[in-house]
Amino acid sequence: MNITPQVITRFAPSPTGHLHLGHAYSAKLAYDFARKHSGRFLLRIEDIDQDRCKPEYEQAIYEDLEWVGLTWEMPVRRQSDHMSDYKQALDILDQKGLLFPCFCTRKDIRREIEESGRAAHSSEGPLYPGTCRALTETQRQSQLDSGKPYALRLHMAKALELMGHQTLTWTDLEAGEQTATPETLLGDAVLARKDIPTSYHLSVVVDDHQQNISHVIRGKDLFQATHLHRLLQFLLGYKTPVYLHHDLLTDENGWRYAKRDNSKTLKSMRENGEELSF
Ligand code: GLU
Image (cartoon, rainbow, N blue to C red; front, side, top):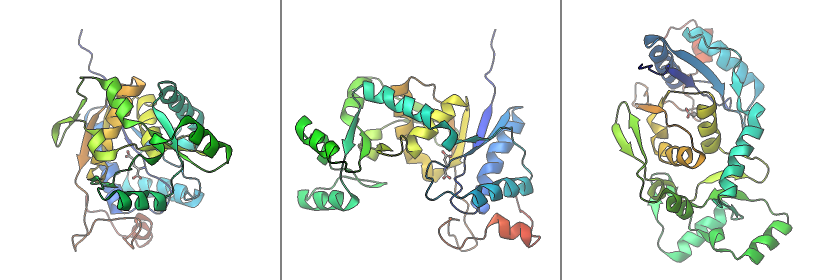
């Protein structure tokens, strides 16, 4: 018997600002894909960064997506309700000896890179130079005892050791078969902070697993992150969804829509009685 698993897609915005046309495009792609395959479409609110997330942005997400013409299953998963799930995943990585606390500030990291004179770079910026990975147990303990804030980083070299000779791959419906090379792209990625037991990378991998997402449809700006997500799936024993990293929508001047600049928001469009062109 050959049972094709059900298609489940999701749109996962962060309520840190108003959605723009690029979001509508991405959400609609995921929604249409699910519809085309008689699948399910989920909405997830990525609100782990409680300092930047605001309830009015979350409310606007629902209104915007309704205006775009989408419907989604209830209840909506909100990451802030699932901190214990992320903590559990983090504990699994910790038990495997794959985490280390890093006390460096951004400034410390920049200085260390300048002094070493050989900054390995990736498309995400300079790679973490490994400062706190090299601390002795006593040094580490004294930093922890001092109550300093810290990030928990993935010990990439140990993770690769666990991988042994296996090759981690994923299917990207647009870019084709991919081989994960997280080491050259992201280094010892931050997976949690002292006060927040997760990061974007960890929570997105846990959520996609727990929600049985079959197809992750998102912008090409997150393509590099998938190298790390694939590794985390391996380390946590999760299945790997199929990915589709779509082109990013640009405005009439060729600029990507982004929350940080004054891209036209969906809210302003619906309030002005404008219509979507896709
Ligand atoms: N929350 C992310 C964002 O708003 C998207 C995460 C994802 O699709 O994996 O950019």
